[in-house]
Image (cartoon, rainbow, N blue to C red; front, side):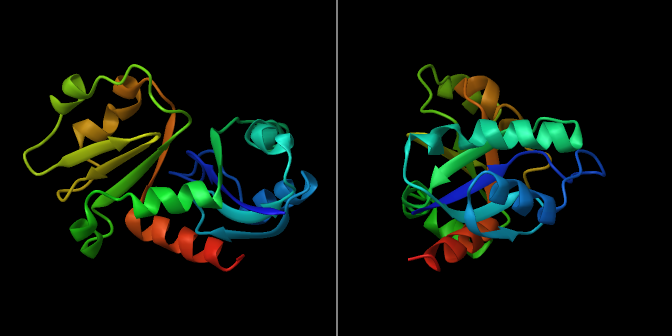
Amino acid sequence: MKTYIALVRGINVGGKCLLPMRELVAILHSLGCQDVKTYIQSGNAVFEYKESSEASSLASNMTAKIAKKRGFSPRVLVLEAKEFKRAVAGNPFPEAAAEPKSLHVFFLDSKPAKAKLTSLASFQSDSERFELRGSVFYLHAPDGIGRSKLAANVERHLAARATSRNWRTVCKILEMANEYA
């Protein structure tokens, strides 16, 4: 068994795309996942799953099950715990961790082949900093992500699908994943 992390994008926001965490747990169990734990209502799950090539299709199977039960198809990204740990260790803005709501980690579905970082930088405010490391994009937005034009343009300029979590959530998910060691 390996430890995995599922990040479900765009659920339970503004009363739309509702998916109670108990249903997410049931879906994961139905796919063969074990010892499933969730964190907050935004679709974060840590679990164990058999080591096999099937793990790569787990995200699409989750999406299909959610679509069947709830009538919408969220983006789901499944990472091995070791990938998630590398992303946390790779934080280029460690001083920003003191304000965890200002630091955001965008987990990309692949390493961008045609990232347009120069054009993305044109959306950057004076207080923002960003860095792309492999398939992880880090954004320090001290003035908040809600008004960040840079954050709103990440996927388009990186040409990759992404789901983001603030540093507080990332650290809590890591803490949960470490319990499986």
